[in-house]
Picture 1: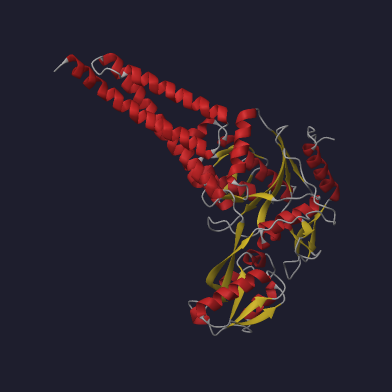
Picture 2: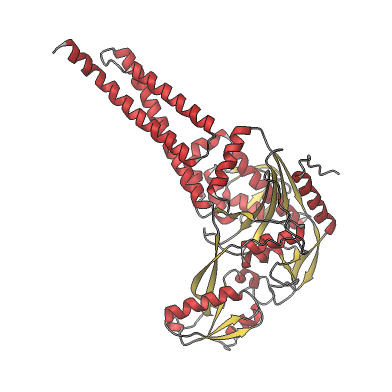
Length: 493
């Protein structure tokens, strides 16, 4: 064999390694460009770094007969190969997950068809000749959509009987006035809070659960008067964070147990979190001035929750993040748990909490964030702990430890988070943070009130509510405006 042929043959292994690495680098940089998560200068920097590494591998593996150099180059090439494969996996997982949870502009309500526990019907088709009780004054659009679905399935008109109020509707089923009822599934926990209905799920049976999807509408008149909507500067983000607690992992319209408004100034890197207690007694945007518990706004849609809070604070809320706290357990467990500062010792749901710092898994953290009776300030304490939990999760996500659990955390987001932020807007915020750098000043504040017993809009009986303390509401408005104006938020003023 000629020396020329031997030299060509000696270059083949290194050439194969180089081509494979070049293809992976091109794929990796291309994926990064598609995600739009990196500023252009960082994208070029990443490309240059990897191309330099590939060039070094090519130089070291250029001659198979130079054993030491080739082995060093091959080892470097394998390391680079692993980094690129993992990088491609992480980038694709990030892109797919963010696309899945962002740009959500529809919402789902689950409307149940209920019969008595011992009713012989096993399906809607079995009940097609029944008289269906419906609500005449609440959730009428979802009820009408459910009736239409039933008619499509049975191929005939549905005989309905209207009742004024949730308890009257349920009573009509219990006393035999109607054969079945059509009721938003989210009303069941509301019913269980009423005297005489705590055991309602032992008396009725869910025949079917119908999903009604509607577009999320944002109200251009969020303030309580008729003044024009105030447009925030481009550097200001007002974000509604809603925490719901469903029995499954899906995100549906139901009571919102966590109601936080995040006012964010991108330029000054200030974030104010204002928590409003779930039992705050305020008019809903759909109740024609009749007060209700804030938590009930979520039954009618996240847009109703946003508009209701907008009325309370005289602001406009169009953007939201919705978190299913039952699914949130998966995220905390994927992160390896979180550290929380327990304010007072107590036991609940089989878990014991000791005052002081405590490492919690997902179930423990959720129990702690739900508890209010163990603390003197009740709902305010619960809101405070929920904000602390969100902050603890954020600290974990921003730590280097996330790299070893990245794919597990991304997988846990499925069915747990959703937002109407578009993917491009999320990517823009990431790019801006990478470009500007710096830490954020995050301040929390909770409005307060006094307990009372009143009849809410969504209920047919009196229930515990919290009458707003207008002084704390005004303070919250003032703090929000400080963030908008670029001032340093001072809770002591």
